[in-house]
Amino acid sequence: MKILEIKNVHKIYNSSEVQVHAVNGVNLDFEKGEFSAIVGPSGSGKTTLLNMIGGLDSPTEGEIRVDQTNLAGLKSSRLIDFRMRHIGFVFQSYNLIPVLTAKENVEFIMNLQKWNKRERDKRTYELLEAVGLKDRAHSRPSKLSGGQQQRIAVARALASKPKFVLADEPTANLDTKSSENLLNIMEELNREEGITFIFSTHDQRVMKKARRVITLEDGRVISDEWKKKNGSS
Ligand SMILES: Nc1ncnc2c1ncn2[C@@H]1O[C@H](COP(=O)(O)OP(=O)(O)OP(=O)(O)O)[C@@H](O)[C@H]1O
Ligand SMILES: [Mg+2]
Image 1: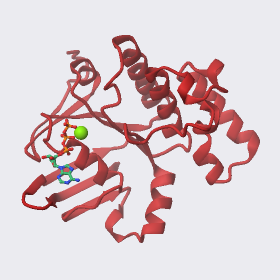
Image 2: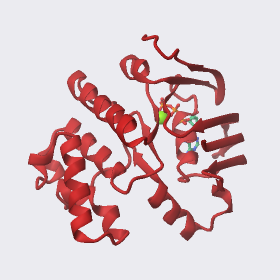
Image 3: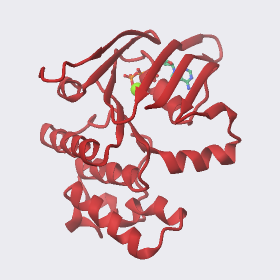
């Protein structure tokens, strides 16, 4: 089942003097349950594309459909609601809320969605356990390492059972061990909860874990490769 369709998407930034064609005619489909990486040199359009998929920015031309819904067809209030229900973000610019504890950060969207307390607590502790930070539930972000904060961000992204999770360089700024931990958690959630993951990365180790690697260059898809079922690498 297609969960995401990107049809002839362009993004042109018109700043003062220069015009940047950041995404240039991208066509991609994603199926439910994918674990896919978007790679490419700095400036190739990875963040721009992820932002548009997440409805944080809109294409200059073309269409993005999430589970049959055309994002451009939604009014801004509906878009915010849609995003909250269906899409989890692990973006570097999406920081944790500093005055809330780890647990409160994770349950933030469930609160907005008015989950009852029992269900909310259950889900929150499950996720904190999944990311190995149950014992830090009541710590504020400032008391956690960068890797731990990133893991809390993953737990938060998954809290409301999104259809898919978008992660922009989730392991940037993490040491090897934290990166590995984070990737294992993402893989496990993909396998066990069937959540679709689309992430951008520069990191070779992260790339290796992906089952599909999409390469961008100058805003265009220059390759789109699926790993063989049993092949590693
Ligand atoms: N808000 C903006 N206004 C103008 N140009 C922008 C804006 N955001 C990005 N760009 C330009 O669009 C192009 C693609 O940028 P983007 O951030 O998507 O690249 P990226 O692949 O994520 O790079 P990196 O690996 O460095 O994160 C770049 O040339 C960038 O300078
Ligand atoms: Mg980027």
